[in-house]
Length: 129
Image (cartoon, rainbow, N blue to C red; front, side, top):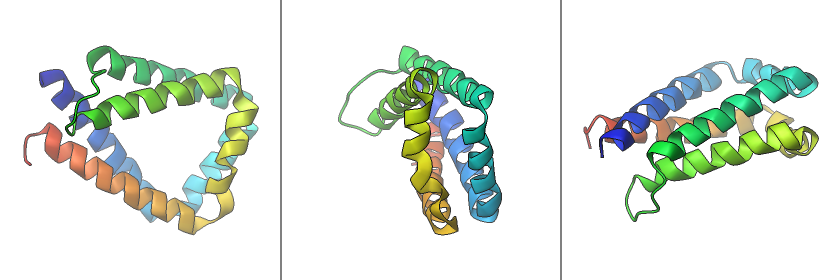
């Protein structure tokens, strides 16, 4: 259970901090997504990073259990899929992400969801709940 807690701490804190940034600066994060979609090099780098972190997570936790730790496994697999899509089919992935750029409301909803997951994972990872 140690590696799962460690991953939950890292992923939870990362998600929470990014979520606060999105909630405070939704327009800037939408601009970041716009710039990412215009740069093949940044798209490729994002794919490499997503694939790396997804494989890293799955190397330490790839368990389909009926408890909270399955969230870590799902995040790992989603990261692997995102990385593969960004590397192999960047245009398809970028078209799928068009809905995020529709407005600040979508960014705020995503920020709230990320914040809730981040807080949950952080608390679980540190053993506070």
